[in-house]
Image 1: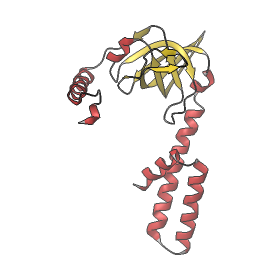
Image 2: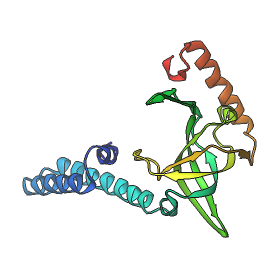
Image 3: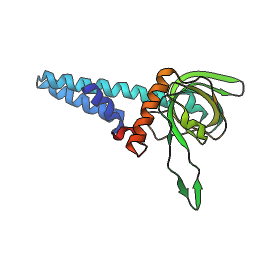
Image 4: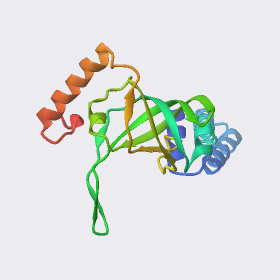
Length: 194
């Protein structure tokens, strides 16, 4: 439990702050011979350290070197695509987009192909994306942009054609139909509302 708390603390404070706090708690509890608090502090330190390594690996991913450039990405869908709400920028209505988290499997630019397994946020305008299911492998051409979301290395924005590499598995189709039923029953397009 403390390891999870240490990992979650990375979203509230910087890694060095949580590690310094855990070290202070560990030192104080060791001095007072409180073994339970010492174990808790070291678990917090371990959880914070692991999440720091994860954040470092996302920030130094090969995908981040291509921010702002047009590339082809092949990715495996991790979450259901969700339609975003329409927005206004000035007097212009931004078209509806679909957003989901995926794992980038490879990126291609000119004559270079890089294979990786990095989480990315995918934003697409194509309505066909709404029918995609987790586990499917898709490829598209688009632009990589910075993302404020901590769990992904970047945002991949595609306005073009999306190519389906693999069809959804039987399990994915079954689970997708269950989620669709829950969304319909909730009446708010929110499968978690029930």
